[in-house]
Image (cartoon, rainbow, N blue to C red; front, side, top):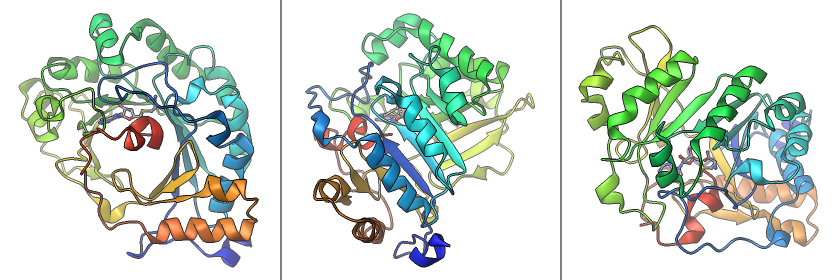
Amino acid sequence: MAKKDKGFLSDRFGRRISYLRISITDRCNHRCTYCAPIVEKFKKRADILSFDEIVRIVRLMAEMGVTKVRLTGGEPLVRRGVEDLVGMLSEIYGIEDLSMTTNASLLSGLARGLKQKGLRRLNISLDTLKPGLFREISGGGELKPVLLGIDAAIKEGLVPIKFNTVLLRGTNEEELADILDFAADRMITVRFIELMPMSDRIDWKKNYLSIDDVLKRGDIMERVDTSREPERGSTAAYSLPLRSGRGNAGFISPMSNRFCGQCNRMRLTSDGKLRSCLPADMDVDLKAALKAHAGDEELTLLIKKAVSIKPEMGVYTSTGEDTEKGMIHIGG
Ligand code: SAM
């Protein structure tokens, strides 16, 4: 088997890499305050990985033990032909779990095609259920199409669905319990995410709300059973059961409590940099190698090199001022 020939991808700390997140575009139809930079410098078309290049990289990584792929961005649904890419990726031997993170604004028209082409499940960003606040946070986006997108995803069976809700002090803080209820009614899990300093448009210190503070709130304690042992994920995530018995709530604490020890992921940026850690600037330029007509053997070595420089822990040193390090480029 090819997998045995090439060996598994493991880093210096013995962590086996099985998960790849791919930012398939740096463009987005929303301008979220915590994500989009003030000055937008989009990559040129020629510098963005083509579908064939993405498929080639994923095939090589699948041969070395990657089983899980998530498409993200920017907004993955603004990339033309995204369903075709999903179809190509879902046919790669070894890829068992193909998912996507989306703002869902374009989902209602695409959910069926994505499901038919092999997408399994979705994470949907949802920070508020108030149309006015939604417009404010997303820089002019509308809530209605997002809600229609969520309905379409449920209807097409793109499940389990998870909501990503970024915690914003004084903005959606009072609404978190309502979001939990809205999600539980639809068998959706909410994952509350601590704000990371990734954008120059928001004052991180002023807006940051920790998971610990959320778990001290009476309306959250009423709903989440904090007496139970949390179920830990691979990185900074854990989940606790809802008291109603209608599923779990997830808590992602990249700022207050990282668990990098079990990190199993790599990230591929839209312009082909294979990045070993979200906050650390450690990457290998696969697009340059592809432009220079690298063969599979050379690409395999570069992929192994990118994994070998994975840091033991990610530390957020960026204040969000460097747009090259922003979420839209790296992919959240
Ligand atoms: N456009 C898609 C979306 O909105 O889901 C995918 C890309 S977005 C960068 C992926 C995730 O990153 C979203 O769930 C978003 O909430 C999260 N994210 C972006 N900037 C963040 C920040 N500064 N802190 C925490 N999460 C952030």
